[in-house]
Image (cartoon, rainbow, N blue to C red; front, side):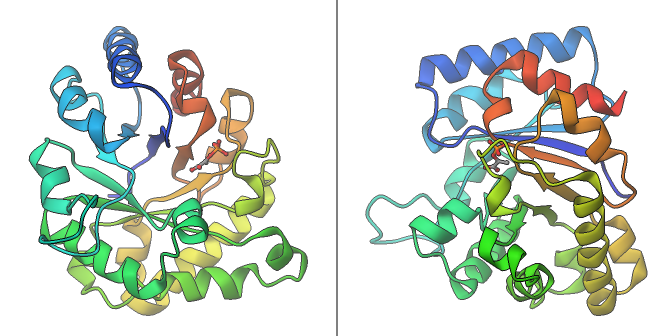
Length: 251
Ligand code: PEP
């Protein structure tokens, strides 16, 4: 069954104390008014072990924002998928455009990361999306198809475990959101690619989230589209009230 999901990406924000306070507040708010969708918070690595025991797993999952492309060993400063899983986290964002652009994450590196995440029972939230020049040149479909290639080496069973997030880079943190029609059009295209590779059943069950300046005021008009199964939320995930406002788009 396809799931509706609202996932927060805290990025490099919040000290440990601030992150704990936000996770506690979200847990309280969602305990008082239960969500109608799956909720995930993806936090900096150092928050994971403190945050996971604080949240009710029936209300909210916890995830990392990245993991290493190697299983273990002499990779100073890296954090493996096994380490992420050992904190109790269940998800990991992979392929975020900021990782691709600033840290040189290639299709081959991402393929390794996704495989290691799955091998450690983490659900990858795999991000794809075009930059502005590519959209203006009408190349968005070509770009997302090439990015999807790094997960198309997965077995059907493994592909069935991942969540996709379409995030037009021109909409991330810019205040410029894709229109509901733009989102629906490319989400339907992404689903058709999945169907072409893995068949209709796996495509129908695949959650495809929209990300890019999603906020309480525009979440509903985006999520109401048949191929938009929720959102990956950056800035608006940093305040419990805003994040809850987006979660409530499913009410
Ligand atoms: C993101 O970076 O995943 C994101 C969607 O950011 P924002 O909501 O701030 O645009």
